[in-house]
Length: 212
Image: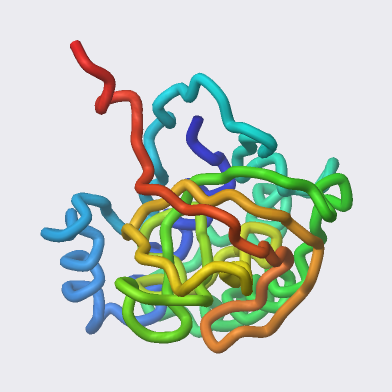
């Protein structure tokens, strides 16, 4: 299942960069093309996950469930009249500043505090190489925090590998499992609304991986 908020955020950020800086538009268009390594475009979310026979002690969740009831990114976008902004419009920067402030303060869903869950997303390392890391961000769409600004805080998970485990080798896309907590952190790449103590991680597998 694709995250609706991830699609909205990803598309908005690519459009914003082009509107604020037409000179950089060509580079941003190239960034939006499929990556030779990942095959994903900036703002693209993961396809449906391959069904699992069991998730063990963890509850499989999607990104939309991390949003508190009644909170909607569409309402925020509509209130700013972004469709009225033209190329290189200085108001676009003001709108982005407003969005960034609101997204960094985005409320979380208290239902998922101290819950053991599994969730799939894109890995953004915080402490060096992806091959061997103990700390990273998990985000719902490709390019977040790197090719495009960070999503709302309630769509970013700050992940720390369990102290009982060694540093872990990660794929660019991963299904992670651990204890999720409502903890707001200001990392070097994003403000996060959730923190997870990671117990296990595995490469993400989608429906197309199923045998014919």
